[in-house]
Image (cartoon, rainbow, N blue to C red; front, side, top):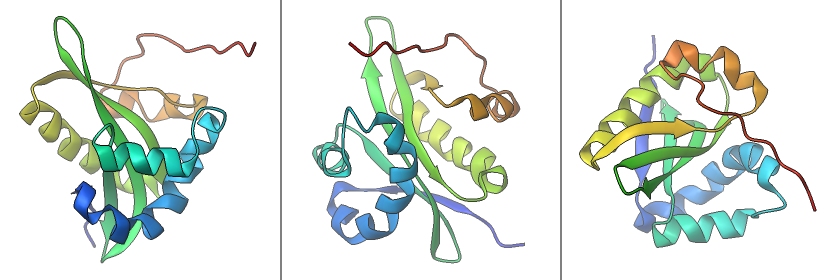
Length: 139
């Protein structure tokens, strides 16, 4: 069985990786299309506002995700912002172990993620508990 690898993409690697990552991350970014486009996201990653992660299998990019560190008065939180890709049921658990390790090294106390309703079937399997739901009212 071929293993999946989750790797952090440094800002220096972004231009080389972006053509493979952008179409995958755009699958998730579309739900935020009124808030950011791909070029905004790319610049946020380049400046360090978000971090880009790739899930690969045999040098093929299967998924891309972004995270960001939020600093609150009592703790830091690693927030998973966007995840887009294929075969998530095969790599999600392993990817979260890598993300969890990174979050701990950054001094984060928790990992948080917002997701579409389809995430309700994946989140509990990964150890997430629902703490809130987000609603949006366009004005």
